Length: 279
Length: 336
Image (cartoon, rainbow over all chains, first blue to last red; front, side, top):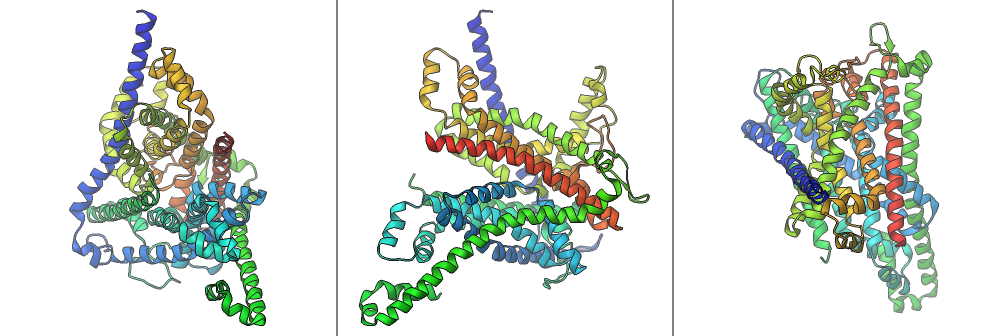
């Protein structure tokens, strides 16, 4: 074979393999979504949303888990978002060029991908162990600690995108810096910052590991944040690994609910972010 | 919201000029508000650093009994026995490393191939939808991967892939040990495959972004010399993008090492080191997730927290290297 033919062959092989890899990657997404729809839709019914998690063998739903997830996610967002926004504001507005900002940004980027189960252990150590019992607020705190890096990162990125002229114009009419940030910079970066919050919700609504030993689980309905509370991911974990067919069916239904919610949040965040860009 | 009221008053000079005293007071209040806001943001930024310190310190305190009892032997001891209270971390460490290695062996070539397709081959109209599809893979929670791995992937592997592997490598020396034993479906290999699917999007999306920073002039020059597409990719694009690609792979590795739920579903939770990839094993995170709430006795709990500390330190180092590489890249771009 001539060197030219070998080169062409190599090029053809590489092209073919890269197309195959892309098909495999996109195929994986469709396989997962397909399995979720296939198994999940069959187990989805009105009772999933209206009844409590059942004991093995009885019929029931996921109401307490859904409510528990909503409560803890809401608390986590309320706790984590302001902290993330304020810290992001410092990095982008006050300390843009100093070394401290560099360190915080570096650490935050690491926290962004750090294993969430370690955050669960941390909250167990500082909240659950001293209090002597598992509680929903410990779970919410663990989730809040996962919210902070996401919100911080997007807030900083969005504030950095704001043109300098906007800030200068605000300052030139005598606006103090804090007022300029709150009324001009935040307003200009609003959509991007909201995207960050949506992504943070998407991130924590499927988190299981940090809840396992903070909020634990609860077979009954509870809105009391000082007691253990069930959540969708933990119930899915427990039910999917059980030997009971109806528990496994409920786990699939729960997985479908979470996946749809997370996909919807991701798409909403994407639309929101795209709407802001001139392209 | 006193600041808002004050600021509007401040912006209308007519009223402020009429009363110089009120004006001085208003400015004072503004300055106070300004300082408070600045300190608040600074405090929040410090809190992020404190969070990292807090995690490390609290885990060290929690793990102290285990390290006192076992010393450095904790790292190399194989037994994990709650009854005799003898705990060692080598089996979970081994499982964590092996599953992550399998994931990287699969995900790095596939992820780079997809990135190459997206940046060099793909028709323009298809780039965005395909890119979004790959990124959506990254958004799927790990528990979904877990349930899918357990009920869909594991049975497929058990009935088709694993018997084929056993048959294929059975006669080959050395490799036969890797693929020995009955096909359980769940086990180290399955966990590695699931992890590969999970970290694939990170490798692809970062590499694609890095590939797109390669100046078109470089590629065009190579094409002008008669290079094939593959030669341009391998000899021009890859060397240019090397640091970013390594950063992306390290980031993916960090994710794989720390991933918990998906692995917990399919690893099989057996505290032993098997040569065979088909055998059940365990990882650091899976051990913690499975046993923490049921752990009785201080030494048991402390040993699990010590595992958590190990995991955090390992992933921290890997992620720090990844971020360092990617950050240097961003700075280079900024200068160019």
